[in-house]
Length: 107
Image 1 (cartoon, rainbow, N blue to C red):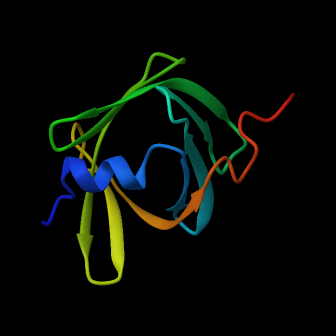
Image 2 (cartoon, one colour; image 1 turned 45 degrees about the vertical axis):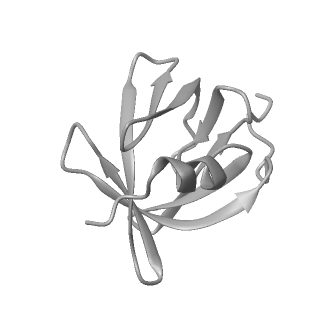
C-alpha cells in the first residue's frame, strides 16, 4: 500500500468532487473548502456531513450517524479509497474541480 500523505490530500480533497466507481455505478462526493461534505450515492441517497483531514487519511461524520474513515491508496494509474474500519475498497474514477455535480441537489 502507498497511502497518500496529508500534503497530497490537501490538494486532492478540499474544493473537489470525487467520482467513485461503486460496482460499475458512479457516486459523487463534494468536499467544500470548509468542513462540509456532500455525497450522492448511485442509488440516489444524498448525505451531508463534516469532514476533516486525519492522520493517514480523512474522516467524515455523515448526517445519518455513519462515520467514514478513509485513506487513499495509490499505485501507477489508480487511486483507491480504503475504509479504515472495514475491509472495503472503492476505486476513485476521477476528481473534478469545484462542485461539479451541483451538490446538494434540491429535492
